[in-house]
Image (tube, rainbow, N blue to C red):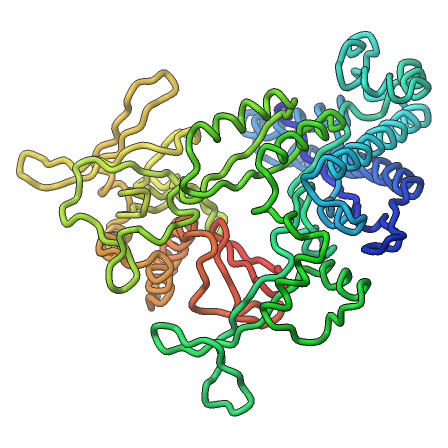
Length: 539
């Protein structure tokens, strides 16, 4: 999107339009689908008006504030630009979710040519219905202010609309349309949890997988299936993708009875989800599918191609070239283990306690992340020194305190350099490259923050350097008994800064889900996600 524009999203559940799913009589109700897409576009346009009402209220509040015009100028200009962009283009993002389930419910195998052809037809119908509704809205309420049929007459997307529905194009050329662009295929992670479907345009992750729940081995009614290396007992149980259970019932399999692993494997082989999971679908086929669907999406499509750690550079390059050839606006390729702190493989250098083994001597120069965050309405900043991509030391405190440190907001990375003064006293300097490409050094980083913060930071940095697992460091910090409010704020800041480095998928050792009381919590991008009910907690 262009600057100051808003990301407005709504998703239509494709699975909901499959009649008699998972049976030979299954069919897709295109007529109802097009009708509801039209409703979705109208809702999106109404949301823009609601957004403009709120923006007007914000601008009115800024104008009424007692500060002088110079003080209010930046904020006033920001919201004025946002309002101008919303009024000028009225951009919307109608999309879908449940594509993988829709195809399975129709008996189509995700990634095959026939399934891709059907997906393209569904997205073509989405585009024509949404654009038809936008033209209808323009006839009722007026087109977006900068609409120009002449300006976009050679646009390839508009030409596809013209070829597919000449009457719609003629109406659009005459009356315009209400929205500058209409369609986005978003990831829909939370939405798919609520609708119990596959997310966005993606295939199913797995129709059946195994989970473990910690149990009390002394309870006579408890079944113990697995005992781990520290002696904890676990019960194993299968977790089913919701629509796979519907397939089971529709095809004469009792979804409520217990199955052995062998029986479940056989059931999966009989289902339309077989060879159609995110790990099964051919990577190049997925890219080509995205490219064909992209022709009927005026914004972009969110798709991630997950590759194993041992994939070679040639295939990665081939995927990007194929995405370009296929007409994709963008493509995300993720190689397992390619980014430190996200996913970790089993061959990292770990110590006996499950942490990480750092070299004994600190290198003179460490790469560093600059992490900014709000903490009790205060602006904070943290400098996290990294070694092998893992936190090694941390400096943090108020960003705008007189004793603090001011770094341009554009700076997200730099280096922490250990230097010595003439009296051999060590100090830590922060160095970054400014917009002009020149190195800027801030000397004495260790003395820029409150001295009490610095002493605690040395404690935490010492723990990090000895390789304690990040989650254990967080638990240590959280357990500090401090009676000073400022120090408690600092403690919260350290937790906020370090959480982002916990590898995705790490099981939380403490706490329960506030929604369902489950202890199946895992870290994802620094947030705690409940694997049982899908609720999340960040910060």
